[in-house]
Length: 132
Length: 132
DNA sequence: GCAATAAACGGGTATATGCATACACATGAC
DNA sequence: GTCATGTGTATGCATATACCCGTTTATTGC
Image 1 (cartoon, chains in turn cyan, yellow, blue, purple):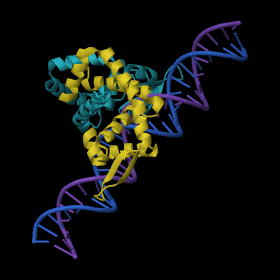
Image 2 (spheres, helix red, strand yellow; image 1 turned 45 degrees about the vertical axis):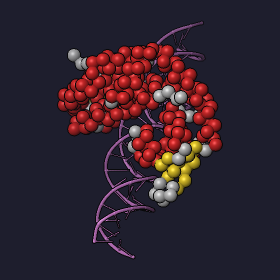
Image 3 (cartoon, rainbow over the protein chains, first blue to last red; image 1 turned 90 degrees about the vertical axis):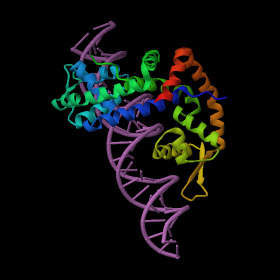
Image 4 (cartoon, rainbow over the protein chains, first blue to last red; image 1 turned 90 degrees about the horizontal axis):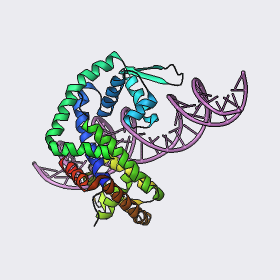
């Protein structure tokens, strides 16, 4: 009768996987969303909120709020850009440190997921992410 | 150097897919999370919050809040169970109606995703969801 | 140079989600 | 029957997320 809802499958899987990453990163005091954001900021060195939103595929207002939490926690700093409208975000020393501390934990999580899913499903996951 | 974060792939894919379902269901005034919850309630006719939480793999407190929104919107009703601690949830007439109106829209979304991903990736999605 | 338009943020409102804690009710040992 | 323990909810606090609207700052057309 009713086929499984693909969206619900995804949502549930994501919650579980994210919980695993969150738990792994907890010692550093950040979660997986923050880790991803910190890494994007690191890659660009200097980014505006709008650009970060594009990179992360997130609404600008979401990025703004998430960055605010990172700033409050001393992991990033923001400044006005040349374009006075722009808020330019970059890692603070604390953020660089946190990222360095978090990366091995994140790596371990990656390995764990790879082990759990196996090469074929990992490949499929990449393909699915690319397709949607 | 840095491999793609599987968690971030999943999170991003889920956001996009959920947005598609949310948009499809918008005419009925519910989102995909609510649709999934309504369907679970319909299947069981009568469920406690704890059981719903188990079914949906969600924290009990999350279920409690989500059900509260459904109740406010007149889609479900809750009553005290035999066990006086229990809140028993069931669909209201409005909820039955909404579910009926939403289901064709949801079906269309399912078809759209199937078309977008193709049989192989759909199968893989099921396998991944099962594995995590 | 000025008016219209576009772009970047910020804040309000709303949902979904989890954890920790408090409170209410049940149940079993005695 | 009473007390300890377990189970079911509710609530406070925090994050992530989106949409809409208002304000500020560029940019562009004339």
